[in-house]
Image (cartoon, rainbow, N blue to C red; front, side, top):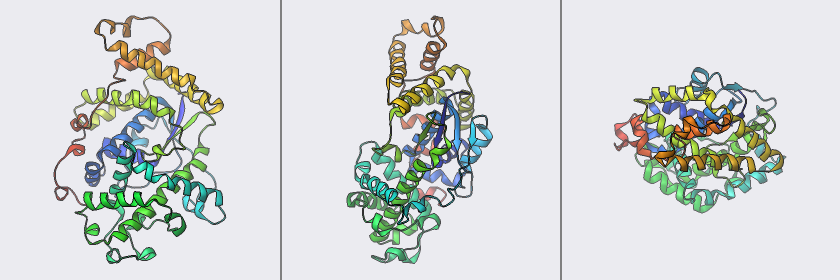
Length: 385
């Protein structure tokens, strides 16, 4: 199937899998605490599943609290589109970018870290950064005795992956405002967590600084090495919600995604009684030949944008859909979806709108298939991680 190669961060597939498979059930608390991030991951996954030619991953996805939601979702339900491409010479991972010999990489990471204050105070991006730290604390903060001590620095012992690579130089550049907001978020949203209850504020700041460095470092690693698995000018990186807010990113694809995907999901949810039926609808849509002209148009527009920095084709695609959305608002024009002759692309745009493009949806709309996202119970009523 011709179209874009879409490579997204592993966490996107993981969170989409947690929602669509309800696995592992131990993450229901995380979903309830971080609903916006999970929904953004579902939208990003749906975008890749429906409008790409291939979903590309570079390695097997890690487990999540003993489950493998992302790997299972891709290999069992989207195997016709999933393409695993292994990279050579990248075993060292993102930590290798912090070596003293990698000065350019260190400076790039330093610049990204410096933008974190802007990211966390942003009207939309801020919620994703705050939910990220909640998710990370719940999984990796731990409850070691060292967390009770002030100014312990490298002596703090977190849980599992929480002991991220420490780099005093780069951590010192994390904006104080970012750490201030993170500290308040952790103490407010995860105050029931055993480790947070006993932790000194310095321990939370240290965790947040290490986490920020790792999150930024992994993003830069994917930019340097992960994208090599994509076909030149035919592949698009879809970073996690937090990383989509970085100023260095080309955001053209998000215009198309935000116009189309929420509405399609809204219509699918209306037709679904549970998450299994929604997942099955996504599988069908991922192979639906009706959308093929849109996939080809999107891939061609992206190639022009990457090759020649020309956005006319992408602008045209967005305009065509917006125009059809406006026409759909008038009942007397709805018959043209089926009766108007035209190119396959024109018919595909009409069908796309008929199936829901352009319709916004609220968090509560998802409660029909994902009740955990809107649950108002207290944390102790859930499985504690």
